[in-house]
Length: 400
Image 1 (cartoon, rainbow, N blue to C red):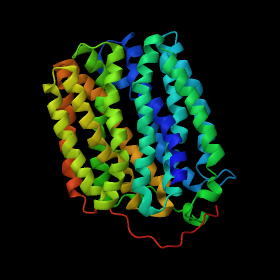
Image 2 (cartoon, helix red, strand yellow):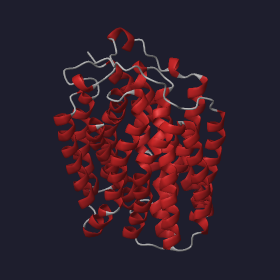
Image 3 (cartoon, helix red, strand yellow):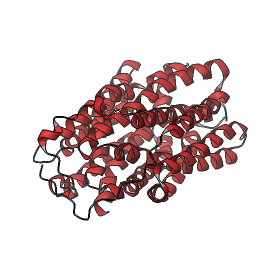
Image 4 (tube, rainbow, N blue to C red):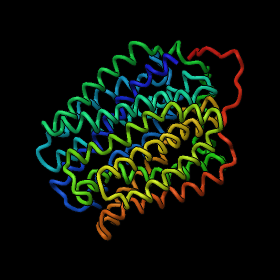
């Protein structure tokens, strides 16, 4: 598992960048546009890139063959570019330059996001992938804690500071990945080039996969809407300061991190489907109860419980998608996973913003709990239990 912990630095950099982006970019947008629906729409830019690029890049990385490996070249290109553009965001001089820097940062991150995620199952045996996903999400969640905790304090000192810190961390994480992950020798599954070229997106969409992807879509509808609008909810509905609004999300991220590795163990022990269902039910109840929380303390307790439930869902969902496909289609299935999550993130913030404009910020968590209820229906229709099959004692050392 040593390599998994090292690969976690890739997830750490992605998570800290997105957490800061989602927490503080809405404040920049709020200076130019004052409708929640328009802010929600602008916060979906990254998902338009993900919608068109993630499946294609994931599939492309399945067929890539360089001296650095299949996935690493995408990180080498994308991570430095993302670092540059994330620094530029707080230094925008107009609405146009703000949107331009947002788009360029999101395009850069789309280059390496799917390959980074796909590298985990590449270097991990099938029966250990759920636990490995818990480890790397532990690292990613720790990035979220830094973003919402330390990032809020940095933002209070200067709005540019958290973005500069995220860029520096991204470059440090790239150095760690290049120094300690040697893809040519660490990948455990051999994927012959003739098989790589035959991978088709359409061929991966069996009934079980489609039902699972629909369930993923709806729980991300809930999660992405809350993530994009929560700081504004705290500011306008709870009456908190911008700095306190960002800090509240620390509780969600903290308990996600604390429960990440146990969630992977539970999914491996009892089956991914059962643990996901438990998490969806729990998060539905949390989202339904949050509108009743009228104090900061109660709100943060609810967010802590929500982080635990989200860990049960999120830690097990990606390995579930991969486990019902072939070893040769890991990058392709990674792209499909991000395709549906990106569709949800495109649709959810503008729709939620429109609902908020009509009914107020109190409607946020009614909307979120409804999405979880629909997700629960579709995950019940999935018959695959999500348990990893036994693997042979001998693994095939990669020769790609």
